[in-house]
Length: 316
Ligand SMILES: [Zn+2]
Image (cartoon, rainbow, N blue to C red; front, top):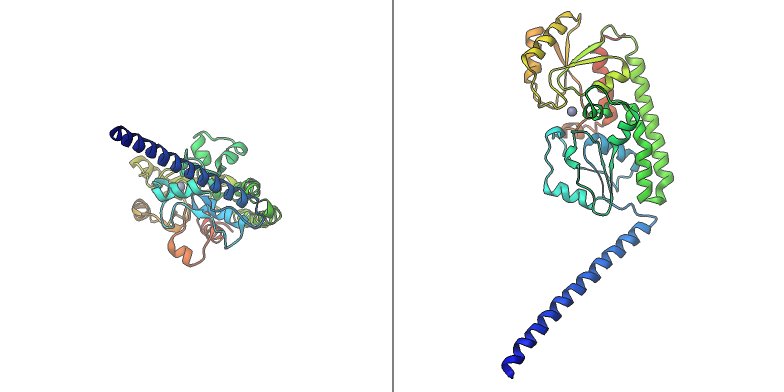
């Protein structure tokens, strides 16, 4: 009798302990959900973190939050070229825990793809751009890449970001709208500087290392010929190098515009063979640690790009 009783007690105890664990876990999950709800309803709290995939998107969102206590987390670290970036487990964790994730769309941060915040929203800003600007002959990807280099396209994104932030932080709607309006003013100033600075130029084509300036050229009336493709890792073929040599030989003033953050091998070779001068032109895809130390940002680097373009396009 005793021998039969013992296993029965053991089975009963096991069922009881497993049940107890299940119950404790259920209560804990409910508590977490309650905390999240309290936090959502708290008028003074922005549910953090707000995350962006790459620098230009992070900068844009940061201007609208405009609160040093709530900096936007940018996934691709400074100094790292985002085209070839592979997210780390900690990046995926950050995305998972975000209340809002903003990303560019296109291939530059295509790795975001299916990664979405567990309890937040994922905002693909490229969808807004694609809905406003028609696709070009090269298709969806090209339309979406590097649109941040045209300040007007960033202006189009401001209302989307204001609306998304307001949804999770209703108490600050007025603040977000005001910051958004200030940001639009800064971007319109930049646009005016580009329009006036590039209004009277003697050349109409620039030679660049990386095919990142199509949107910028379209906005301000110049065309681009490039050594590499949409990613700076692409290598130019012999025909491309030959074509660029011919183009440069026909220009009265020869310049190759090169993003100083990446390897300059092919630009150096073309410069040597054609006598063209290399000038810096930033893609704004990421900041280098030195640019961060210098407090450079989207606006200062876009102004630096304008100075380079005025030289390269021989503007009056
Ligand atoms: Zn690029």
